[in-house]
Image (cartoon, rainbow, N blue to C red):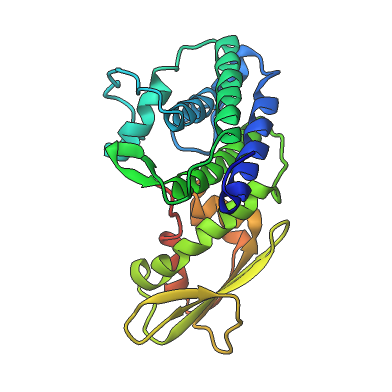
Length: 274
């Protein structure tokens, strides 16, 4: 690949996860495409449709002209409406149509990545008519594809790749969102610290520090007197942070030490994906 070195890890993570998705869905019979996934409102077919659609947008393809049904409960705002368009337009596609389009889209995107020589700060297309840097776009695609790979694995009872390159990209993206969750949304007090202790295939300990002005930051140094410590496993962590499960459903997998009210506020605001 000729992709910029700072983008290579995102390209590698994307490739690993999207090839895993293709392998997962290739042998599925028609009925299995309708299985529910942890992603609200979406079936296996819907997730693959979303993957195809978003990668086509990275290729610069025009968006479909399509009217959405009015009864989709999970479509609540402009962002979810935007994402649903690529999904609903493929809702009645057959299994062979889905796998063929996925395979063709992967071939086209791999070719694009092999020839990618733009700098990371090049502005490219983003959802809702916005723009973003190429680095932001590639990081988002690596994150999105890995999370949806895990959605499919859950739906199909095929666990795996919890420590793959995409998992590391996802960890970093979720950690970057922690200061806002803890300091702004959950309202942790100034001059306090919250420790997140995660075990399992992706293991880490991070401290979110809230300064005197109420602004949060995250680092890898332990805190001597955290106001709250949350300990859980990696799978529970990313499922909570990606809105795939509610805190009450995994209460037995999250250990809380310290201020219970603040801990519950943090967990209520833990989901950071749209």
